[in-house]
Image 1 (cartoon, helix red, strand yellow):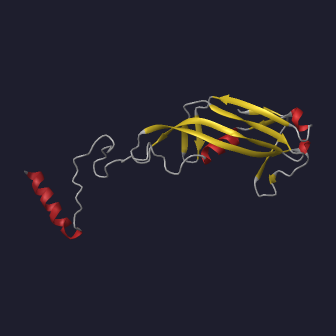
Image 2 (image 1 turned 120 degrees about the vertical axis):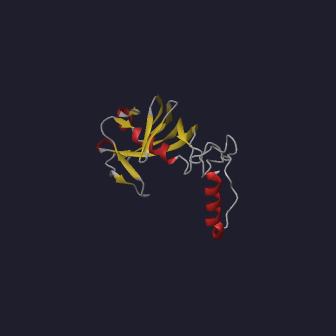
Image 3 (image 1 turned 90 degrees about the vertical axis):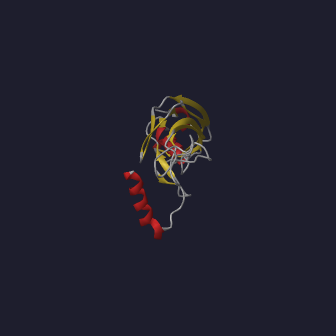
Length: 179
């Protein structure tokens, strides 16, 4: 758990607290499954008491093990994401938990600690690319035989077949298979 003690800060409107934390997590839970984390999760930044809320600004960084969407090989992906969250509770100025003036989420502050783990997980998930590629030039897998085209060309016939002659081509393949 990435927790920050804020008992002194809650009593000082305008006050600021710097923090750094590093934790070993085994995976990042997402809606589609768990993503292995292969390096410690590092979080750093500041917590500011604005009088109404506690504003957390910082950065999170780690390395994930992803699977390429084209060739299905595993690769390491370094993630650096910005973190900006608002926390409110009874002792911070009675700010309403739910939404702020800009429509952003205000998280509840319970006790004298801010638990950053949900915010860190969210920041990491939002920093992931839409398409996971081991490299931009990844050629993927052959649609016919499954050969990884990054490792070499396969022996499949890649010539386009005129759909009007597809039945004839199938007949020729069967005939070659008999011999």
